[in-house]
Amino acid sequence: MAKVIASTIAERIVSPAMGWVWSVVHIMRGPNASMGR
Image 1 (cartoon, rainbow, N blue to C red):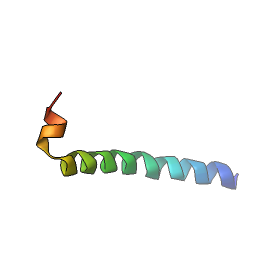
Image 2 (cartoon, one colour; image 1 turned 120 degrees about the vertical axis):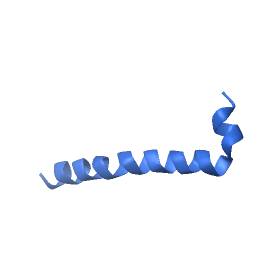
Image 3 (tube, one colour; image 1 turned 180 degrees about the vertical axis):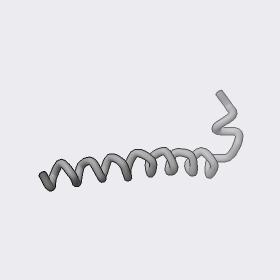
Image 4 (cartoon, rainbow, N blue to C red; image 1 turned 180 degrees about the horizontal axis):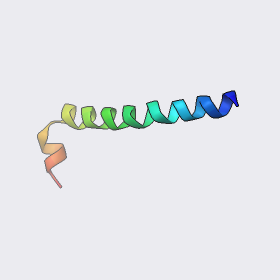
């Protein structure tokens, strides 16, 4: 049970964290990198 709870908590923490990290990466790269599509 502990592993299931730990994995669930990890998923809920990691998913928003990854989204935040990617947004920060795009901001750090500058507007040209994100707008250049």
